[in-house]
Length: 178
Image (cartoon, rainbow, N blue to C red):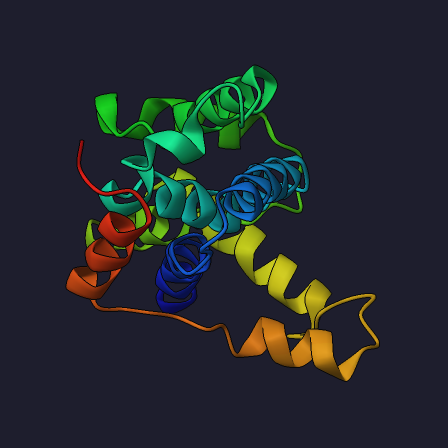
């Protein structure tokens, strides 16, 4: 759960520390692509974290950054489709259905999985846990296919601003209220 929070805060921090509007738009598009790739790779934990980072008030209020002329409609459409799996309505029905349709190995959104363990174990949460354990063993706690020490270090030590007031100050500095 901590890693999910870190990734969410990292996404927010990276976007809000990017002073150049054009670079910020490119970063936004890159994060949307990464979230889509995570979902395609059946890593819903990372996809959720990225989507939630982009959906925070400090990032979503950046109208110039999200403007259609700068962030093409295809990215906004893709982001809207990704947002659907994070919809909490009906006890996260869209997520549960999407997860059920995915073939293993798959990584569940951990906060929802853990929330399920606060109640008695259900068949679905046991299946989630088994998929997660399988995937962790498959990965062996390593970043697969990455030989660069620099890439490994950046994945393990994300630059994060975890103060909401600081994030909002950055957001308002980038795009002051109209």
